[in-house]
Image (cartoon, rainbow, N blue to C red; front, side):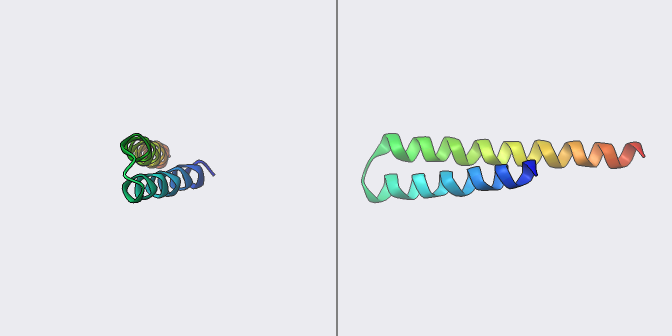
Length: 57
């Protein structure tokens, strides 16, 4: 279930970033970019944890 939240965070970040670009709002664009990267990091961490669990079996 955590990967769904990570993906959702990425999508929301992309939307904010696109809105920031369209509105020429650097703060909104940067916030969206940070949120998108945060989602990617969470997803990568979850994948790594899942891989470690599977290797431990």
